[in-house]
Amino acid sequence: MNDFAEKIRTQHLSPLWNVMASLITPQPKSDCRAHLWKFDDIRPALMEAGEIISAKEAVRRVLILENPGMAGQSKITTSLYAGLQLVLPGEIAPAHRHSQSAVRFVLEGSGAHTTVDGERTMMEPGDFIITPPWAWHDHGNGSDKPMIWLDGLDIPIVQFFDASFVEDLGLDEQEIQRQPGTLNATYGEGLLPVDNRASGLTSPIFNYPYKKSRAALRALMDNGDIDEWNAFKMHYSNPLNGGYAMATMATFLSMIPKGFESRPYRSTDATVFVCVEGSGSTTINGEEFHWSPRDIFVVPSWSTVVHKANETSVLFSYSDRVVQEKLGIWRQEKM
Ligand code: GTQ
Image (cartoon, rainbow, N blue to C red; front, side):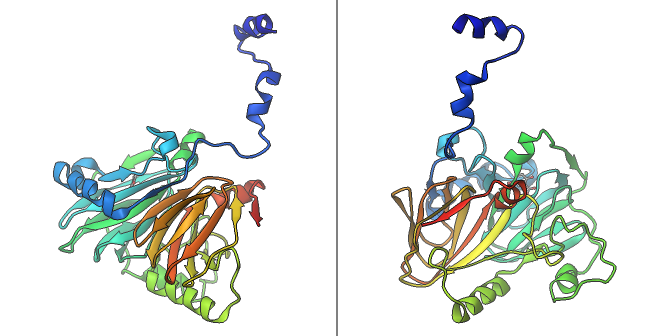
């Protein structure tokens, strides 16, 4: 057998029966590990990065959240990237575009901005902001305080497909083509242009302000039936089709009432969570992680999860669920 495998290796052939069991596993097997980053513990490193390199020099001054099971791979899960981006007062992160799309979730500061394909939006804590694939984007901070947000990108997905392109605009900032708030006013009020020609792959709304998202969850909580696994959970939606807001990353916001303990669940989409408000803990395959505002934690695929809230809490999360659903491979078990 070994001689045979050795012999055919020179012809770039390999016997399936030696590797079958590790390729097609009875359950998901991943190097991805559960982990929690306490914001207060990692913030000093980010501020130190602010002293040694400017946003312009770095292009993007970001500290990558690396999954401890995949060190050196710039991944938080097998398919997703996460990083903390710092823009100091007066700084600009210059305009560029790339195949990868980005989720921004604002953690600290107020009054910085990002410009995406000709429209500028201000960034406030809890806002969920989208950079679609191949959209020009630059960031700036005109406030007098540091701005910190979580970047979630589909870098590993694009890497897997060998489909990465990037282009620099050659200017710090792109030209602004519309008034701030134009896209939200056009697409975010229950109306659509009759001859809408936007592709629908990504939501035309690129800032989902926390104030509005929180009010939606609050209304759901005050009037809806609680889900024993998710408490009150919504996905950000694309007004063109009601689907997820982005093509590669599904994004969610959940409100968990004080004292709630979820029943256990598991799903095939490894998920990155951010605590927005409140405090509590999440037990992942028996290991308990305590969170409070701005903490970030990651749940690997098919790990059993139980959430507990000490106070009424809000969690933001993102995963590749939208891709897995399209491919027909997403699974969930609510126990
Ligand atoms: O803001 O454009 O965290 O291009 C990584 C790559 C952020 C960005 C990241 C990027 C960006």
